[in-house]
Amino acid sequence: MSMFTICREIVAEGELQDSLDGMREAEANFTAEVGVLDRRFYQCVQQPHVIWANTEWTTEKAHNLAAEAIMKVRKDDRVASAYFRPGLYFEIFCLPVEAAWHDFEEGEAGFILLSHAVIADRAFDRWEERCRERLAALEPPPGLRRIHTYQNNYSRHEFVTFFEWRGEEAYEEGRLRGERTLEELVLIETERSNLAAYCQFECRPLVL
Image 1 (cartoon, rainbow, N blue to C red):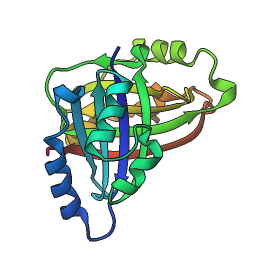
Image 2: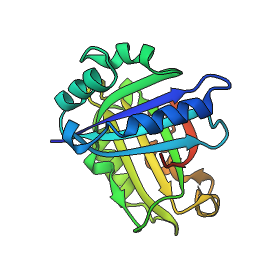
Image 3: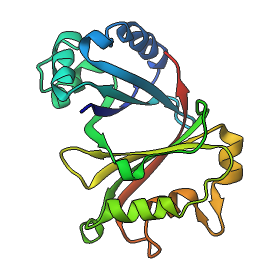
């Protein structure tokens, strides 16, 4: 079964272009031969120095071996990689929540709302089941390409959801559902009490 790593880098002031050039150069090493199945980047609209990456690996072992070979750090690189990256660095190992994966439209997304959250202890029981029920009842607005949710493989309370839209205009037109946003309808209960922490990033695909 494949696994994913979701990373966020905050590039230091004045180093964005150099960092992007370095990422482009490094991408030549992230190949199928080292276990990379898919790799996508997202750049924050309001803060372009915030870069997210979502990488699908054949196995966690493949990730660790690649980290040792490519990044020149020890295999368990979740801490060691911080000194390799030029900016502030965050990484989780995660698996897709099958109940919270839906593809609504074909085509690549031009605008992505990325939600990063922690489920409260009191609401964690049956969270995946309730999320599946909310998604089953959802009538997707035009322009919503897909919703993909990933849970931290080592701390199941933490998750990242990608709301992928055709473009920013579709997002602006379709996001509000009555008095609530699409993100609220999908991620939280009516009482708005099931998240212990929440942050979100408006992003565009970054092609390296």
